[in-house]
Length: 608
Image 1 (cartoon, rainbow, N blue to C red):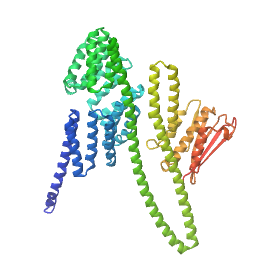
Image 2 (tube, rainbow, N blue to C red):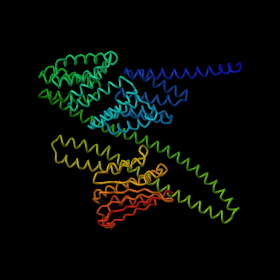
Image 3 (spheres, rainbow, N blue to C red):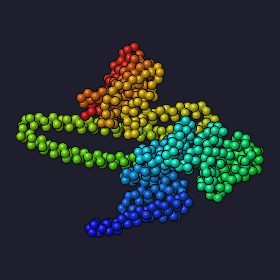
Image 4 (spheres, rainbow, N blue to C red):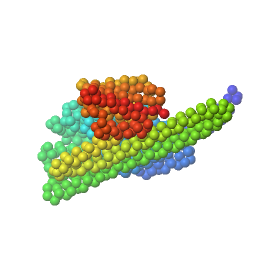
Protein backbone atom coordinates (compact mmCIF):
# COMPACT_ATOMS: atom_id res chain seq x y z
CA UNK A 1 0.00 0.00 0.00
CA UNK A 2 2.83 2.43 0.82
CA UNK A 3 3.98 2.17 -2.85
CA UNK A 4 0.48 2.45 -4.33
CA UNK A 5 -0.47 5.70 -2.59
CA UNK A 6 2.47 7.77 -3.99
CA UNK A 7 1.73 6.34 -7.43
CA UNK A 8 -1.89 7.57 -7.20
CA UNK A 9 -0.67 10.99 -6.05
CA UNK A 10 1.66 11.22 -9.08
CA UNK A 11 -1.32 10.72 -11.42
CA UNK A 12 -3.55 13.34 -9.76
CA UNK A 13 -1.98 16.43 -11.49
CA UNK A 14 -2.39 14.73 -14.89
CA UNK A 15 -6.02 13.85 -14.08
CA UNK A 16 -6.89 17.43 -13.03
CA UNK A 17 -5.07 18.86 -16.06
CA UNK A 18 -7.17 16.67 -18.42
CA UNK A 19 -10.33 17.66 -16.55
CA UNK A 20 -9.38 21.35 -16.79
CA UNK A 21 -8.86 21.09 -20.58
CA UNK A 22 -12.24 19.33 -20.94
CA UNK A 23 -14.03 22.02 -18.86
CA UNK A 24 -12.32 24.78 -20.86
CA UNK A 25 -13.36 23.13 -24.11
CA UNK A 26 -16.99 22.72 -23.02
CA UNK A 27 -17.13 26.35 -21.81
CA UNK A 28 -15.87 27.79 -25.15
CA UNK A 29 -18.24 25.53 -27.12
CA UNK A 30 -21.20 26.57 -24.93
CA UNK A 31 -20.37 30.29 -25.23
CA UNK A 32 -20.06 30.00 -29.04
CA UNK A 33 -23.33 28.11 -29.44
CA UNK A 34 -25.17 30.58 -27.19
CA UNK A 35 -23.72 33.45 -29.27
CA UNK A 36 -25.09 31.78 -32.41
CA UNK A 37 -28.53 31.33 -30.85
CA UNK A 38 -28.66 35.01 -29.81
CA UNK A 39 -27.06 36.21 -33.10
CA UNK A 40 -24.17 37.80 -31.14
CA UNK A 41 -21.54 37.92 -33.90
CA UNK A 42 -18.84 39.48 -31.67
CA UNK A 43 -19.08 36.71 -29.04
CA UNK A 44 -19.19 34.08 -31.81
CA UNK A 45 -16.03 35.55 -33.43
CA UNK A 46 -14.26 35.36 -30.05
CA UNK A 47 -15.19 31.68 -29.70
CA UNK A 48 -13.88 31.03 -33.23
CA UNK A 49 -10.52 32.63 -32.33
CA UNK A 50 -10.37 30.88 -28.93
CA UNK A 51 -10.94 27.49 -30.56
CA UNK A 52 -8.12 28.08 -33.05
CA UNK A 53 -5.78 29.20 -30.23
CA UNK A 54 -6.63 25.99 -28.34
CA UNK A 55 -5.90 23.93 -31.47
CA UNK A 56 -2.46 25.59 -31.80
CA UNK A 57 -1.58 25.10 -28.14
CA UNK A 58 -3.02 21.61 -27.59
CA UNK A 59 -2.46 20.23 -31.12
CA UNK A 60 -5.90 18.61 -30.85
CA UNK A 61 -7.71 18.50 -34.22
CA UNK A 62 -11.08 18.42 -32.45
CA UNK A 63 -10.63 22.15 -31.76
CA UNK A 64 -9.82 22.82 -35.44
CA UNK A 65 -12.97 20.95 -36.54
CA UNK A 66 -15.04 23.00 -34.06
CA UNK A 67 -13.29 26.19 -35.22
CA UNK A 68 -14.47 25.58 -38.80
CA UNK A 69 -17.93 24.56 -37.54
CA UNK A 70 -18.37 27.89 -35.72
CA UNK A 71 -17.06 29.78 -38.76
CA UNK A 72 -19.88 28.16 -40.74
CA UNK A 73 -22.37 29.36 -38.07
CA UNK A 74 -20.95 32.89 -38.34
CA UNK A 75 -21.54 32.97 -42.11
CA UNK A 76 -24.98 31.42 -41.64
CA UNK A 77 -26.00 34.33 -39.38
CA UNK A 78 -24.85 36.68 -42.17
CA UNK A 79 -26.81 34.73 -44.84
CA UNK A 80 -23.59 33.85 -46.76
CA UNK A 81 -24.59 30.30 -47.56
CA UNK A 82 -21.74 29.36 -49.90
CA UNK A 83 -19.18 30.11 -47.15
CA UNK A 84 -21.40 28.32 -44.61
CA UNK A 85 -21.41 25.20 -46.79
CA UNK A 86 -17.65 25.46 -47.43
CA UNK A 87 -16.69 25.56 -43.73
CA UNK A 88 -19.18 22.81 -42.85
CA UNK A 89 -17.32 20.57 -45.32
CA UNK A 90 -13.92 21.53 -43.87
CA UNK A 91 -15.16 20.70 -40.37
CA UNK A 92 -16.67 17.42 -41.56
CA UNK A 93 -13.43 16.33 -43.28
CA UNK A 94 -11.39 16.82 -40.10
CA UNK A 95 -13.98 14.89 -38.06
CA UNK A 96 -13.73 12.11 -40.67
CA UNK A 97 -9.99 11.85 -40.02
CA UNK A 98 -10.72 11.75 -36.27
CA UNK A 99 -13.35 9.01 -36.92
CA UNK A 100 -15.87 11.10 -34.95
CA UNK A 101 -19.08 9.76 -36.50
CA UNK A 102 -21.40 12.00 -34.45
CA UNK A 103 -19.67 15.20 -35.61
CA UNK A 104 -19.52 13.97 -39.24
CA UNK A 105 -23.24 13.15 -39.17
CA UNK A 106 -24.11 16.52 -37.60
CA UNK A 107 -22.10 18.49 -40.18
CA UNK A 108 -23.76 16.57 -43.02
CA UNK A 109 -27.18 17.28 -41.49
CA UNK A 110 -26.34 21.01 -41.25
CA UNK A 111 -25.21 20.93 -44.90
CA UNK A 112 -28.54 19.29 -45.82
CA UNK A 113 -30.44 22.12 -44.04
CA UNK A 114 -28.49 24.77 -46.00
CA UNK A 115 -29.01 22.93 -49.30
CA UNK A 116 -32.75 22.69 -48.63
CA UNK A 117 -32.86 26.41 -47.81
CA UNK A 118 -31.40 27.36 -51.22
CA UNK A 119 -33.65 24.78 -52.98
CA UNK A 120 -30.82 22.36 -53.76
CA UNK A 121 -33.23 19.54 -52.95
CA UNK A 122 -31.23 16.74 -54.60
CA UNK A 123 -28.09 17.84 -52.72
CA UNK A 124 -30.05 17.96 -49.45
CA UNK A 125 -31.28 14.41 -49.98
CA UNK A 126 -27.74 13.16 -50.74
CA UNK A 127 -26.27 14.86 -47.63
CA UNK A 128 -29.11 13.50 -45.44
CA UNK A 129 -28.68 9.91 -46.64
CA UNK A 130 -24.90 10.19 -46.20
CA UNK A 131 -25.48 11.48 -42.63
CA UNK A 132 -27.53 8.34 -41.85
CA UNK A 133 -24.56 6.11 -42.81
CA UNK A 134 -22.59 7.67 -39.94
CA UNK A 135 -25.39 8.16 -37.37
CA UNK A 136 -27.32 4.87 -37.64
CA UNK A 137 -24.39 2.52 -36.77
CA UNK A 138 -23.75 4.46 -33.52
CA UNK A 139 -27.51 4.80 -32.79
CA UNK A 140 -27.43 8.60 -32.46
CA UNK A 141 -31.24 8.76 -32.28
CA UNK A 142 -31.52 12.52 -31.72
CA UNK A 143 -29.87 13.33 -35.06
CA UNK A 144 -31.26 10.29 -36.92
CA UNK A 145 -34.75 11.64 -36.16
CA UNK A 146 -33.81 15.08 -37.49
CA UNK A 147 -32.33 13.57 -40.68
CA UNK A 148 -35.62 11.75 -41.39
CA UNK A 149 -37.51 14.96 -40.64
CA UNK A 150 -35.37 16.85 -43.16
CA UNK A 151 -35.93 14.12 -45.78
CA UNK A 152 -39.67 14.53 -45.14
CA UNK A 153 -39.47 18.31 -45.67
CA UNK A 154 -37.47 17.89 -48.92
CA UNK A 155 -39.88 15.23 -50.22
CA UNK A 156 -42.83 17.52 -49.41
CA UNK A 157 -41.16 20.36 -51.32
CA UNK A 158 -40.70 18.00 -54.31
CA UNK A 159 -44.42 17.14 -54.01
CA UNK A 160 -43.62 13.50 -53.15
CA UNK A 161 -46.34 13.29 -50.50
CA UNK A 162 -46.10 9.52 -49.90
CA UNK A 163 -42.32 9.74 -49.42
CA UNK A 164 -42.70 12.71 -47.06
CA UNK A 165 -45.26 10.85 -44.94
CA UNK A 166 -43.02 7.75 -44.88
CA UNK A 167 -40.01 9.76 -43.64
CA UNK A 168 -42.10 11.56 -40.98
CA UNK A 169 -43.41 8.18 -39.76
CA UNK A 170 -39.82 6.89 -39.49
CA UNK A 171 -38.91 10.00 -37.51
CA UNK A 172 -41.88 9.32 -35.16
CA UNK A 173 -40.64 5.75 -34.55
CA UNK A 174 -37.19 7.11 -33.63
CA UNK A 175 -38.83 9.78 -31.44
CA UNK A 176 -40.25 7.04 -29.23
CA UNK A 177 -36.66 6.05 -28.45
CA UNK A 178 -35.28 9.60 -28.45
CA UNK A 179 -38.20 10.83 -26.30
CA UNK A 180 -37.80 14.51 -27.25
CA UNK A 181 -41.06 16.47 -26.74
CA UNK A 182 -39.71 19.38 -28.82
CA UNK A 183 -38.87 17.19 -31.83
CA UNK A 184 -42.25 15.43 -31.46
CA UNK A 185 -44.11 18.74 -31.63
CA UNK A 186 -42.15 19.78 -34.73
CA UNK A 187 -43.12 16.46 -36.35
CA UNK A 188 -46.79 17.06 -35.51
CA UNK A 189 -46.51 20.50 -37.11
CA UNK A 190 -44.82 19.11 -40.26
CA UNK A 191 -47.43 16.36 -40.65
CA UNK A 192 -50.19 18.94 -40.16
CA UNK A 193 -48.70 21.18 -42.86
CA UNK A 194 -48.46 18.15 -45.18
CA UNK A 195 -52.26 17.67 -44.97
CA UNK A 196 -52.97 21.41 -44.87
CA UNK A 197 -51.31 21.86 -48.26
CA UNK A 198 -53.56 19.08 -49.57
CA UNK A 199 -56.54 21.10 -48.22
CA UNK A 200 -57.37 18.28 -45.78
CA UNK A 201 -57.90 20.83 -43.01
CA UNK A 202 -59.73 18.63 -40.47
CA UNK A 203 -57.00 15.97 -40.64
CA UNK A 204 -54.31 18.67 -40.39
CA UNK A 205 -56.02 20.11 -37.27
CA UNK A 206 -55.67 16.78 -35.45
CA UNK A 207 -51.88 16.97 -35.74
CA UNK A 208 -51.72 20.65 -34.72
CA UNK A 209 -53.99 20.00 -31.71
CA UNK A 210 -51.88 16.98 -30.69
CA UNK A 211 -48.79 19.20 -30.69
CA UNK A 212 -50.59 21.89 -28.68
CA UNK A 213 -51.78 19.33 -26.12
CA UNK A 214 -48.26 19.09 -24.63
CA UNK A 215 -48.29 20.27 -21.00
CA UNK A 216 -47.01 23.84 -20.45
CA UNK A 217 -46.03 24.22 -24.13
CA UNK A 218 -46.77 27.95 -24.08
CA UNK A 219 -44.32 28.51 -21.20
CA UNK A 220 -41.60 25.96 -22.10
CA UNK A 221 -41.67 26.26 -25.91
CA UNK A 222 -43.31 29.61 -26.83
CA UNK A 223 -41.89 29.60 -30.40
CA UNK A 224 -43.31 26.12 -31.10
CA UNK A 225 -46.59 27.11 -29.50
CA UNK A 226 -46.85 30.10 -31.87
CA UNK A 227 -46.08 27.92 -34.93
CA UNK A 228 -48.69 25.28 -34.05
CA UNK A 229 -51.32 27.85 -33.06
CA UNK A 230 -50.81 29.81 -36.30
CA UNK A 231 -51.17 26.68 -38.46
CA UNK A 232 -54.27 25.62 -36.53
CA UNK A 233 -55.73 29.12 -37.06
CA UNK A 234 -55.07 28.92 -40.83
CA UNK A 235 -57.08 25.66 -40.94
CA UNK A 236 -59.96 27.25 -39.00
CA UNK A 237 -59.85 30.23 -41.36
CA UNK A 238 -60.28 28.04 -44.45
CA UNK A 239 -62.91 25.87 -42.75
CA UNK A 240 -64.96 29.01 -41.98
CA UNK A 241 -64.51 28.70 -38.19
CA UNK A 242 -63.66 32.37 -37.71
CA UNK A 243 -64.69 32.87 -34.08
CA UNK A 244 -61.15 32.95 -32.67
CA UNK A 245 -59.08 33.59 -35.83
CA UNK A 246 -58.30 37.25 -35.08
CA UNK A 247 -57.70 36.54 -31.41
CA UNK A 248 -55.28 33.66 -32.20
CA UNK A 249 -53.35 35.69 -34.78
CA UNK A 250 -52.95 38.52 -32.25
CA UNK A 251 -51.56 36.04 -29.69
CA UNK A 252 -49.09 34.68 -32.27
CA UNK A 253 -47.98 38.23 -33.16
CA UNK A 254 -47.41 39.06 -29.49
CA UNK A 255 -45.15 36.01 -28.94
CA UNK A 256 -43.13 36.71 -32.08
CA UNK A 257 -42.67 40.38 -31.23
CA UNK A 258 -41.47 39.45 -27.74
CA UNK A 259 -38.90 37.05 -29.24
CA UNK A 260 -38.00 39.47 -32.07
CA UNK A 261 -38.59 36.73 -34.66
CA UNK A 262 -38.74 38.95 -37.75
CA UNK A 263 -38.94 36.13 -40.30
CA UNK A 264 -41.94 34.54 -38.60
CA UNK A 265 -43.58 37.98 -38.14
CA UNK A 266 -43.59 38.39 -41.93
CA UNK A 267 -45.38 35.02 -42.24
CA UNK A 268 -48.02 35.92 -39.64
CA UNK A 269 -48.77 39.32 -41.21
CA UNK A 270 -49.24 37.60 -44.59
CA UNK A 271 -51.70 35.15 -43.00
CA UNK A 272 -53.62 38.03 -41.36
CA UNK A 273 -53.70 39.85 -44.73
CA UNK A 274 -55.20 36.68 -46.24
CA UNK A 275 -57.87 36.73 -43.52
CA UNK A 276 -58.75 40.37 -44.29
CA UNK A 277 -58.87 39.56 -48.01
CA UNK A 278 -61.77 37.19 -47.32
CA UNK A 279 -63.32 39.92 -45.13
CA UNK A 280 -63.01 42.40 -48.07
CA UNK A 281 -61.20 44.81 -45.75
CA UNK A 282 -58.71 46.42 -48.19
CA UNK A 283 -57.33 48.96 -45.70
CA UNK A 284 -56.32 46.43 -43.04
CA UNK A 285 -55.07 44.00 -45.65
CA UNK A 286 -52.78 46.72 -47.02
CA UNK A 287 -51.43 47.49 -43.51
CA UNK A 288 -50.49 43.87 -42.85
CA UNK A 289 -49.00 43.34 -46.32
CA UNK A 290 -46.69 46.33 -45.81
CA UNK A 291 -45.64 45.01 -42.40
CA UNK A 292 -45.02 41.56 -43.92
CA UNK A 293 -42.83 43.18 -46.60
CA UNK A 294 -40.83 45.14 -44.01
CA UNK A 295 -40.13 42.10 -41.78
CA UNK A 296 -39.32 39.87 -44.77
CA UNK A 297 -36.75 42.39 -46.02
CA UNK A 298 -35.17 42.75 -42.58
CA UNK A 299 -34.89 38.97 -42.05
CA UNK A 300 -33.94 38.05 -45.66
CA UNK A 301 -37.03 35.82 -45.87
CA UNK A 302 -37.05 35.88 -49.68
CA UNK A 303 -40.08 33.63 -50.12
CA UNK A 304 -42.28 35.90 -47.96
CA UNK A 305 -40.73 38.98 -49.58
CA UNK A 306 -41.88 37.77 -53.01
CA UNK A 307 -45.36 36.86 -51.70
CA UNK A 308 -45.80 40.32 -50.11
CA UNK A 309 -44.73 42.10 -53.34
CA UNK A 310 -47.06 39.95 -55.44
CA UNK A 311 -50.03 40.66 -53.15
CA UNK A 312 -49.27 44.39 -53.03
CA UNK A 313 -49.05 44.52 -56.84
CA UNK A 314 -52.50 42.87 -57.05
CA UNK A 315 -54.05 45.07 -54.33
CA UNK A 316 -52.77 48.47 -55.52
CA UNK A 317 -53.21 50.14 -58.90
CA UNK A 318 -51.47 52.45 -61.36
CA UNK A 319 -47.81 53.40 -60.84
CA UNK A 320 -47.74 51.92 -57.35
CA UNK A 321 -48.86 48.52 -58.63
CA UNK A 322 -46.34 48.64 -61.50
CA UNK A 323 -43.55 49.49 -59.06
CA UNK A 324 -44.37 46.51 -56.82
CA UNK A 325 -44.55 44.25 -59.87
CA UNK A 326 -41.16 45.49 -61.15
CA UNK A 327 -39.62 44.83 -57.73
CA UNK A 328 -41.19 41.36 -57.74
CA UNK A 329 -39.74 40.51 -61.20
CA UNK A 330 -36.30 41.90 -60.27
CA UNK A 331 -36.16 40.02 -56.95
CA UNK A 332 -37.45 36.77 -58.48
CA UNK A 333 -34.87 36.84 -61.30
CA UNK A 334 -32.12 37.71 -58.80
CA UNK A 335 -33.09 34.83 -56.51
CA UNK A 336 -33.23 32.35 -59.39
CA UNK A 337 -29.74 33.39 -60.46
CA UNK A 338 -28.47 33.31 -56.88
CA UNK A 339 -29.96 29.85 -56.23
CA UNK A 340 -28.42 28.52 -59.43
CA UNK A 341 -25.02 30.01 -58.52
CA UNK A 342 -25.22 28.54 -55.02
CA UNK A 343 -26.11 25.09 -56.38
CA UNK A 344 -23.13 25.29 -58.74
CA UNK A 345 -20.92 26.49 -55.87
CA UNK A 346 -22.10 23.62 -53.65
CA UNK A 347 -21.47 21.14 -56.48
CA UNK A 348 -17.97 22.63 -56.93
CA UNK A 349 -17.21 22.30 -53.20
CA UNK A 350 -18.45 18.69 -53.23
CA UNK A 351 -16.34 17.99 -56.33
CA UNK A 352 -13.19 19.57 -54.84
CA UNK A 353 -13.70 17.69 -51.56
CA UNK A 354 -14.12 14.42 -53.44
CA UNK A 355 -11.08 15.30 -55.57
CA UNK A 356 -8.91 15.84 -52.47
CA UNK A 357 -10.15 12.58 -50.98
CA UNK A 358 -9.31 10.86 -54.27
CA UNK A 359 -5.83 12.43 -54.28
CA UNK A 360 -5.28 11.14 -50.73
CA UNK A 361 -6.45 7.73 -51.85
CA UNK A 362 -4.05 7.88 -54.81
CA UNK A 363 -1.19 8.69 -52.42
CA UNK A 364 -2.13 5.69 -50.30
CA UNK A 365 -2.30 3.55 -53.45
CA UNK A 366 1.11 4.84 -54.55
CA UNK A 367 2.61 4.01 -51.15
CA UNK A 368 1.05 0.59 -51.31
CA UNK A 369 2.44 0.10 -54.82
CA UNK A 370 5.92 1.05 -53.63
CA UNK A 371 5.62 -1.43 -50.80
CA UNK A 372 4.53 -4.04 -53.32
CA UNK A 373 7.57 -3.16 -55.45
CA UNK A 374 9.87 -3.60 -52.44
CA UNK A 375 8.24 -6.96 -51.70
CA UNK A 376 8.54 -7.89 -55.39
CA UNK A 377 12.25 -6.97 -55.39
CA UNK A 378 12.82 -9.12 -52.32
CA UNK A 379 10.93 -11.95 -53.97
CA UNK A 380 13.07 -11.51 -57.09
CA UNK A 381 16.26 -11.78 -55.01
CA UNK A 382 14.93 -14.89 -53.29
CA UNK A 383 13.94 -16.40 -56.60
CA UNK A 384 17.40 -15.57 -57.96
CA UNK A 385 19.08 -17.48 -55.13
CA UNK A 386 16.71 -20.38 -55.59
CA UNK A 387 17.38 -20.34 -59.34
CA UNK A 388 21.11 -20.58 -58.65
CA UNK A 389 20.49 -23.61 -56.39
CA UNK A 390 17.88 -25.54 -58.33
CA UNK A 391 18.93 -24.38 -61.81
CA UNK A 392 16.45 -24.72 -64.61
CA UNK A 393 13.58 -25.63 -62.29
CA UNK A 394 13.92 -22.35 -60.37
CA UNK A 395 14.33 -20.44 -63.64
CA UNK A 396 11.11 -21.93 -64.97
CA UNK A 397 9.24 -21.00 -61.77
CA UNK A 398 10.53 -17.42 -61.89
CA UNK A 399 9.50 -17.02 -65.55
CA UNK A 400 6.00 -18.26 -64.71
CA UNK A 401 5.82 -15.92 -61.71
CA UNK A 402 6.82 -12.83 -63.68
CA UNK A 403 4.41 -13.70 -66.46
CA UNK A 404 1.61 -13.96 -63.92
CA UNK A 405 2.60 -10.69 -62.22
CA UNK A 406 2.78 -8.90 -65.57
CA UNK A 407 -0.65 -10.17 -66.54
CA UNK A 408 -1.97 -9.16 -63.11
CA UNK A 409 -0.56 -5.60 -63.39
CA UNK A 410 -1.85 -5.24 -66.96
CA UNK A 411 -5.33 -6.38 -65.90
CA UNK A 412 -5.28 -4.02 -62.88
CA UNK A 413 -4.26 -1.12 -65.15
CA UNK A 414 -7.14 -1.92 -67.52
CA UNK A 415 -9.61 -1.94 -64.61
CA UNK A 416 -8.24 1.40 -63.35
CA UNK A 417 -8.68 2.92 -66.83
CA UNK A 418 -12.28 1.66 -66.94
CA UNK A 419 -12.89 3.12 -63.48
CA UNK A 420 -11.42 6.48 -64.54
CA UNK A 421 -13.72 6.60 -67.57
CA UNK A 422 -16.71 5.83 -65.32
CA UNK A 423 -15.65 8.71 -63.07
CA UNK A 424 -15.45 11.01 -66.10
CA UNK A 425 -18.93 9.94 -67.24
CA UNK A 426 -20.25 10.61 -63.75
CA UNK A 427 -18.88 14.18 -63.76
CA UNK A 428 -20.37 14.78 -67.24
CA UNK A 429 -23.70 13.40 -66.02
CA UNK A 430 -23.57 15.69 -62.96
CA UNK A 431 -22.91 18.76 -65.13
CA UNK A 432 -25.77 17.83 -67.46
CA UNK A 433 -28.18 17.27 -64.58
CA UNK A 434 -27.19 20.12 -62.22
CA UNK A 435 -26.30 22.90 -64.66
CA UNK A 436 -27.70 22.38 -68.17
CA UNK A 437 -30.98 20.76 -67.09
CA UNK A 438 -31.37 23.45 -64.41
CA UNK A 439 -30.84 26.27 -66.93
CA UNK A 440 -33.33 24.65 -69.33
CA UNK A 441 -35.86 24.39 -66.50
CA UNK A 442 -35.60 28.12 -65.76
CA UNK A 443 -35.87 29.00 -69.47
CA UNK A 444 -38.85 26.64 -69.83
CA UNK A 445 -40.64 28.44 -66.96
CA UNK A 446 -40.00 31.86 -68.54
CA UNK A 447 -41.31 30.67 -71.92
CA UNK A 448 -44.49 29.39 -70.27
CA UNK A 449 -44.98 32.71 -68.47
CA UNK A 450 -44.54 34.47 -71.81
CA UNK A 451 -47.25 32.22 -73.35
CA UNK A 452 -44.73 30.74 -75.83
CA UNK A 453 -46.25 27.31 -75.21
CA UNK A 454 -45.07 25.59 -78.40
CA UNK A 455 -41.48 26.67 -77.78
CA UNK A 456 -41.82 25.67 -74.10
CA UNK A 457 -43.04 22.22 -75.14
CA UNK A 458 -40.07 21.70 -77.48
CA UNK A 459 -37.64 22.94 -74.82
CA UNK A 460 -39.23 20.55 -72.30
CA UNK A 461 -38.48 17.67 -74.68
CA UNK A 462 -34.86 18.83 -74.95
CA UNK A 463 -34.66 19.08 -71.14
CA UNK A 464 -36.03 15.52 -70.81
CA UNK A 465 -33.46 14.24 -73.32
CA UNK A 466 -30.65 15.91 -71.36
CA UNK A 467 -31.97 14.42 -68.11
CA UNK A 468 -32.22 10.93 -69.65
CA UNK A 469 -28.72 11.26 -71.06
CA UNK A 470 -27.39 12.24 -67.62
CA UNK A 471 -29.05 9.14 -66.09
CA UNK A 472 -27.56 6.93 -68.81
CA UNK A 473 -24.09 8.34 -68.12
CA UNK A 474 -24.38 8.07 -64.32
CA UNK A 475 -22.20 5.29 -62.97
CA UNK A 476 -23.59 2.82 -60.46
CA UNK A 477 -21.84 2.65 -57.05
CA UNK A 478 -21.49 -0.32 -54.67
CA UNK A 479 -20.26 1.70 -51.66
CA UNK A 480 -23.67 1.90 -49.96
CA UNK A 481 -25.68 -0.76 -51.82
CA UNK A 482 -23.98 -4.12 -52.51
CA UNK A 483 -23.79 -5.70 -55.98
CA UNK A 484 -26.26 -8.39 -54.90
CA UNK A 485 -28.83 -5.82 -53.76
CA UNK A 486 -28.24 -3.65 -56.87
CA UNK A 487 -29.10 -6.67 -59.08
CA UNK A 488 -32.16 -7.47 -56.94
CA UNK A 489 -33.34 -3.83 -57.19
CA UNK A 490 -32.76 -3.89 -60.97
CA UNK A 491 -34.83 -7.08 -61.36
CA UNK A 492 -37.59 -5.61 -59.13
CA UNK A 493 -37.73 -2.44 -61.29
CA UNK A 494 -38.39 -4.44 -64.49
CA UNK A 495 -40.35 -7.40 -63.08
CA UNK A 496 -44.02 -7.53 -64.22
CA UNK A 497 -46.74 -10.19 -64.40
CA UNK A 498 -46.13 -10.67 -68.13
CA UNK A 499 -42.35 -10.17 -67.91
CA UNK A 500 -40.67 -12.61 -65.48
CA UNK A 501 -37.00 -12.41 -64.57
CA UNK A 502 -35.16 -15.25 -62.83
CA UNK A 503 -31.68 -14.87 -61.30
CA UNK A 504 -29.41 -17.88 -60.63
CA UNK A 505 -26.03 -18.09 -58.89
CA UNK A 506 -26.15 -14.60 -57.35
CA UNK A 507 -25.80 -15.92 -53.78
CA UNK A 508 -23.14 -18.52 -54.62
CA UNK A 509 -20.18 -16.11 -54.50
CA UNK A 510 -18.72 -13.38 -52.29
CA UNK A 511 -19.05 -10.37 -54.62
CA UNK A 512 -17.20 -8.12 -52.16
CA UNK A 513 -13.95 -9.86 -53.27
CA UNK A 514 -14.52 -8.89 -56.93
CA UNK A 515 -13.31 -5.53 -58.27
CA UNK A 516 -15.98 -2.77 -58.49
CA UNK A 517 -15.12 -2.08 -62.16
CA UNK A 518 -16.02 -5.71 -63.06
CA UNK A 519 -19.27 -5.59 -61.06
CA UNK A 520 -20.16 -2.25 -62.69
CA UNK A 521 -19.70 -3.73 -66.19
CA UNK A 522 -21.87 -6.73 -65.31
CA UNK A 523 -24.57 -4.47 -63.91
CA UNK A 524 -24.63 -2.26 -67.03
CA UNK A 525 -24.61 -5.28 -69.40
CA UNK A 526 -27.47 -6.98 -67.54
CA UNK A 527 -29.51 -3.76 -67.42
CA UNK A 528 -29.05 -3.15 -71.17
CA UNK A 529 -29.87 -6.80 -71.96
CA UNK A 530 -33.09 -6.76 -69.87
CA UNK A 531 -34.15 -3.46 -71.46
CA UNK A 532 -33.58 -4.90 -74.96
CA UNK A 533 -35.43 -8.13 -74.11
CA UNK A 534 -38.43 -6.15 -72.91
CA UNK A 535 -38.42 -3.29 -75.42
CA UNK A 536 -37.22 -4.95 -78.63
CA UNK A 537 -37.26 -8.70 -77.99
CA UNK A 538 -40.94 -8.82 -76.87
CA UNK A 539 -39.86 -11.49 -74.36
CA UNK A 540 -41.99 -12.73 -71.45
CA UNK A 541 -39.17 -14.51 -69.59
CA UNK A 542 -35.53 -13.62 -68.90
CA UNK A 543 -32.97 -15.80 -67.07
CA UNK A 544 -29.81 -14.23 -65.60
CA UNK A 545 -27.04 -16.65 -64.50
CA UNK A 546 -23.78 -15.94 -62.66
CA UNK A 547 -20.87 -18.36 -62.25
CA UNK A 548 -17.12 -18.41 -61.66
CA UNK A 549 -14.73 -20.81 -63.36
CA UNK A 550 -10.98 -20.83 -62.74
CA UNK A 551 -9.86 -17.18 -63.12
CA UNK A 552 -12.96 -15.89 -64.97
CA UNK A 553 -16.37 -14.63 -63.88
CA UNK A 554 -19.36 -15.17 -66.21
CA UNK A 555 -22.82 -13.66 -66.63
CA UNK A 556 -25.37 -15.13 -69.02
CA UNK A 557 -28.65 -13.39 -69.98
CA UNK A 558 -31.13 -15.38 -72.09
CA UNK A 559 -34.73 -14.64 -73.12
CA UNK A 560 -37.61 -16.27 -75.03
CA UNK A 561 -38.17 -13.26 -77.29
CA UNK A 562 -38.43 -12.88 -81.06
CA UNK A 563 -34.63 -12.72 -81.50
CA UNK A 564 -32.81 -11.07 -84.40
CA UNK A 565 -30.30 -11.70 -87.19
CA UNK A 566 -26.84 -11.53 -85.63
CA UNK A 567 -25.41 -8.96 -88.00
CA UNK A 568 -23.08 -6.11 -86.89
CA UNK A 569 -25.32 -3.49 -88.50
CA UNK A 570 -28.32 -4.66 -86.46
CA UNK A 571 -26.53 -4.53 -83.11
CA UNK A 572 -27.81 -1.65 -80.94
CA UNK A 573 -25.48 1.20 -80.02
CA UNK A 574 -25.98 0.33 -76.32
CA UNK A 575 -24.74 -3.26 -76.85
CA UNK A 576 -21.88 -2.05 -79.07
CA UNK A 577 -20.69 0.40 -76.37
CA UNK A 578 -20.87 -2.31 -73.70
CA UNK A 579 -18.99 -4.80 -75.90
CA UNK A 580 -16.19 -2.24 -76.34
CA UNK A 581 -16.02 -1.60 -72.58
CA UNK A 582 -15.91 -5.34 -71.78
CA UNK A 583 -13.17 -5.93 -74.37
CA UNK A 584 -11.15 -3.04 -72.85
CA UNK A 585 -10.62 -5.20 -69.74
CA UNK A 586 -9.71 -8.31 -71.85
CA UNK A 587 -13.22 -9.72 -71.56
CA UNK A 588 -15.57 -11.13 -74.18
CA UNK A 589 -19.15 -10.19 -75.10
CA UNK A 590 -20.90 -12.87 -77.19
CA UNK A 591 -24.43 -12.53 -78.60
CA UNK A 592 -26.26 -15.61 -79.87
CA UNK A 593 -29.66 -14.81 -81.37
CA UNK A 594 -31.97 -16.33 -83.97
CA UNK A 595 -35.31 -15.14 -85.26
CA UNK A 596 -38.21 -16.47 -83.15
CA UNK A 597 -35.77 -18.45 -80.95
CA UNK A 598 -34.77 -15.85 -78.40
CA UNK A 599 -31.46 -14.20 -77.56
CA UNK A 600 -28.56 -15.27 -75.34
CA UNK A 601 -25.73 -12.93 -74.25
CA UNK A 602 -22.60 -14.31 -72.55
CA UNK A 603 -20.22 -11.88 -70.80
CA UNK A 604 -16.82 -13.19 -69.64
CA UNK A 605 -14.32 -11.08 -67.67
CA UNK A 606 -11.01 -12.34 -66.26
CA UNK A 607 -10.35 -11.75 -62.55
CA UNK A 608 -6.55 -11.40 -62.97
